[in-house]
Each structure stands twice: as C-alpha cells, then as structure tokens.
Length: 381
Image (cartoon, rainbow, N blue to C red; front, side):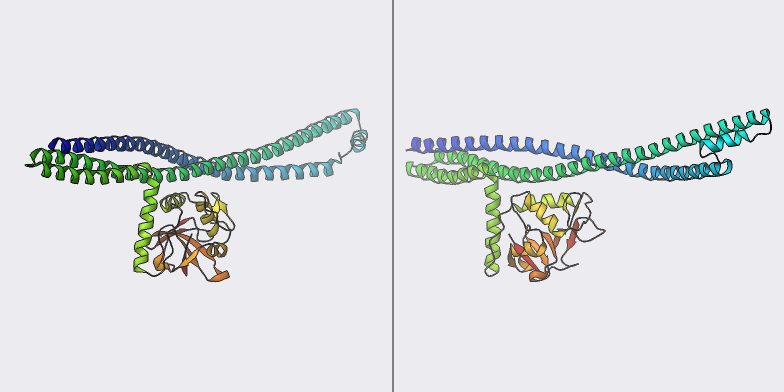
C-alpha cells in the first residue's frame, strides 16, 4: 500500500512540476513583453520631450519672425509712400510728362541732364518696386513655412501623445497579467513543496493506512492548488474581473442594493486617464481629442478606448449610468455635478477621494479632490 501512496505522490509531484513549468514560462514571457513595453514608453517619452522642445523653438521662431514681418511691412509702407512722393514731385507717372520734362529744357546740355535724371529716377523706381515685390514674397513665404512647420510638429506631438497613452494601457494590462502569473507560480511552488513533504510522510508512515491517508490528503491539497494555478495562468483578465466582483460583493454586504461593478477594466481606464494628466492637454469647449477636451469629451475619449460608447454631454452620460451615492463609488466609476438635465460636469473617479477631469478654460486635464469640490452623485457603467 505504501507503493500505491508513493505512486499518488509521484503523480501529484509531476502535475505540480508541470504547472510550475508552465507558470514560470508564462511569467517569463509576460515579463519580456512588459520590459519591451517599458522600453517603448521610455523611448516615446523621450520623443515627446523632444517634440515639446521643437515646438517651443518654433514658437520662439514665430515671435522672431513676427518682428521681421512687422519690419517688412514698415519697409513696404515706406517704399509705397516714397514712390507716390516721387511721382508727384517730378510728375513722372506717365510717358507724356517725362517727354514734357525733357522738352522744356533751355539747352541741349540741360536736356541731356534731364534725360539722365529721368532715367535714374525710372531705374530707382523700378528697383524700389522690385525690392517691394521681393519683400512681399519673402513675407508670404515666411508665414507659409512657419505655419507648415508648426502644424507638422503639432501633428507629431499629438501622435506621440496617443502612442504614450496606448502604451500606458498596455503596461497596466501586462502588469496585471504578470501579477496573476506570479501568483500562479507561487501556488505551483506550494504544490511542489506539498508533494515533496507528502513523499516524506508516506515514506515515514508506520502503516499502509497512514501512508494512504497522507498521500490522499497531499494529493487533494495539491490538486486544489494546481487547479487554481491553471485558472489564474490561463486568463488573468478573468482573475481581475473576479477580484472586481469580489470587491463589489463586499461593498454590497455593507451597503444595501449596490449595483454590480463596472464591466470596464478599471485599471486600464485609470492608467490611460492618468497618462493624459501628464500631457498638458488644455480644456477646450466641445473638445474630444488630445488637442483639447471638455469634461464629457475626456470621459467619452477614455472609455471609448475600451469599447464603452458614452454620449456627448455630461447629462446624457449620467443617464447611461446606474446612480449610486458618492460614498459607494469605486475606481472607474463616473462622478457627476448637478441634477437631472442640469448635470453640468463629469469626472473619472480614481479612488481615495480623487478624480481626473477636464476642469475649465485656462486649465489642463488634471486630478481633483472630492474634499475640494464635491460631486452630487456617482454613476456606474
């Protein structure tokens, strides 16, 4: 019977080693993916910084060019006035007056002199006109080049900001997956240790019944651990959802009739929202992109990346949620200010009494505090 007990333990140990191998391999692969994403984030952040410096230089050049443009405009105005004065003084605005000016000479010498004068004035005027035309073209080209460079840099900065936000979400998902796989690895190691301990107990058993009992107990414990390890390793997102559900159940036990937790992955939502607070994105009325957000444009943008379509206004978004007290809000829920059709502001709750929102004109997407500005109610998607 001892042989039977040892056989069970051997099978149990083999299963534990297999699970441990799978968990270790999966954890290593995820760590490799996580390291790659972190490297991309570092590279993207460097490019974002360089893009901001480049845009700052363009803005500095724009100020300098504006001064040059102002000078060119003054030169153009001065030349225009000069041409008008010369035309009035010498009456050289048409071919007839030029001939009359030469013909009224008192002598041949004076006629020659007046002819030379006319030719000199005409050349000067022509040169002035040419200079004026060149300056006008230079002015137009400077304006065109500066606008094109600024628009190109803004587009690049926007693309980099989007890439940075997407990478932040990937990093959060991989960290959650890695945590789940590390837990599975720890459980597999526990199963392996249980198998080794069971082998010692079976070998040391004084009777076949004791040996069989020790083997059965160890096998049951290891089977439970291995099963849990496989489940956690196969789908880390399911584990995250289970944790969220567990949190919701715990919340429901202490408060009556609390709605189920949001189906949206709150950790990913919060990671993206947090990344947006670091990009100096201004408040823009009606804004729905990285160039500028209003409050509902921000929430619509963030949740839209995770398959949750939100309406365009704060009041309409409130109608899409299940209303709950602010005290029951969980990370990833929405916070609202106002009542009914008069809801006028919305934010993303991050936990700990803090939220992320697009406040108002002259400010950027940033964190806020419930203690500083309390919402009227919370809403769960």
